[in-house]
Image (cartoon, rainbow, N blue to C red):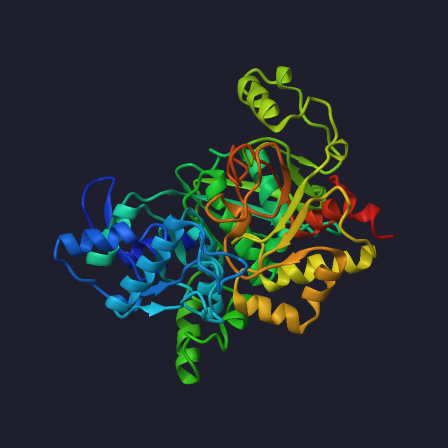
Length: 471
């Protein structure tokens, strides 16, 4: 008898389903839980008020990241709310004897960088966090998704969640991309094609020749932004790249236990005959470096394209006009006509060592410094270990010599929850994942792009095709 072919998502779901509650909802077991300072204090309070205890404290990794300062950490935090949240995380972590990485620890960083870096995330698991970009962990064939604060409390107390199963959506990235086209360009291009609701109701699985060639950290970039396409999760099947990445990670099994784990992990891929509810194929050779022009990740164009005219698409006319007004742009402009104020290289999308390597290598090749027009150019490593490694490799010196600020790890200017923000009207070239109105600070204007594109913008002061700077 031939076993039924299944998708990776089907395998993950079925192996974690505790029971069916109705035709549309299942009870799903959760293996791992990432916790940070912003969405956990109320959940811990709720647990205490209900006089309940943690179901499995060993399933939790707590790390401060969202509103931590990225400089002067030895000084008092000037933001009272941030300080209270950081104190609450510390107090709760100690009180519940959690696996906890405090602010001054060399392992501290953004949860979605620290989790994989420590080997806390492994194939075949379910993992949640009170943060929508938990989709990142699908790069390791883990079913990761963001949850709200009330669900954080539910997982604390029961290790389970009531969930409805999504449909399967396969995205094939085929062919060899052109020079300077990165994983960030893949996912921005996809969102531009299917829209921010194109993945709604689906779990996305990324496959194809171009995905196979990517390193694990580039795969995390793609899965990270699945949520921006409307999907709650993104997945990539296990291959040798996955296994090599996990080998020797601190929290991964060692020796014979690692080999046993690998034999289990290798089950987590979609069967060749598996049926998907929807598929799309993208030729990566047709993708150029991407940048957003508007206030949604789907408002994206190639580096040398023109900002679209809203009147040409009545279905989008109102939203496009609103976006153009907020961003201070007009139809028909090229991005090379738009001047920038700030540059941010960081966030859980693009702050890993491979991101900083590519950006610094390109920066060195340009032999240029940050343009006089740029008020501030920040590089914020995703973890203190990434920072340490980048300093040892000479990456930090390349950035600093060119005029970038080199900071400590944290979410930083990805979101306006700490001291690193845009002022109203300031325009930023950002490697983060969201360009909504006010995302980087009230009135701030965000353009999403890859780390290499951000460097090109930093040295030119405008969006520029990287090839124009390096012959």
